[in-house]
Length: 268
Image 1 (cartoon, rainbow, N blue to C red):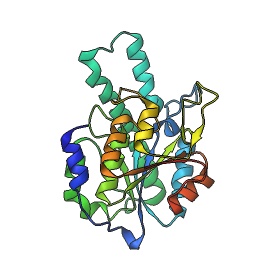
Image 2: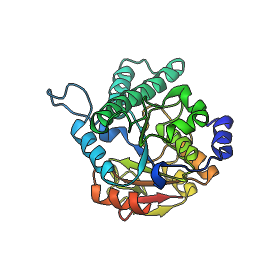
Image 3: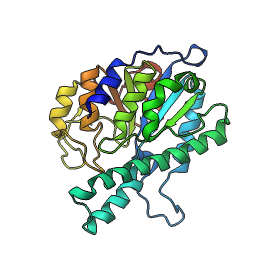
């Protein structure tokens, strides 16, 4: 993480000013949910339209305003796997691999934004995906941003995941919590896909979390509940992440309304 990112997050002191006195909820939508791996020949692009539409209609029924940051998912990893198989991953191309991840998230976010516009109209959805250098200009556009019920965001810069971007947007709206929707139902003591003895942890500190994942940097295509750089930034800034299963809409409703997870995990 850069010193500038930490300072930006810690020094930004804007009052929360949402529409109609309702709360602005910040969601990190895992790319694995929107862009799952599929071999279905009828699905010509790796995007789950059915899930995206269901999620949008679900969110619309709740009395909140939203900032939704979206990852790259299988669209990103498909590129990375091919490039790695061809031996194109090297120190000189690491930045390129990161840009592929960011670009994949922007593509997913753009499709998701188009669906939101189709469902709710242009008046409800910010007119473009927040991405790249736009993050550095967000405080200047705060008055405009808060006029939209849905703000859809992609990635900011190479070397970090969309978790960091979600933290920056949470700070902008004076929110100390990010709701992270994943294809897993929480944080485990080890990778449950590799270790059947792994146990879910319902609440833990950032220090404990960093000890579990055992990494300090963000590698291209890395997949953790929260990436290491974002975890360090959240720890230094007093931010929280709620990790929950994005396919469990009963649990998601509880999390959005109460800010707490019954089945997921809280990292504080």
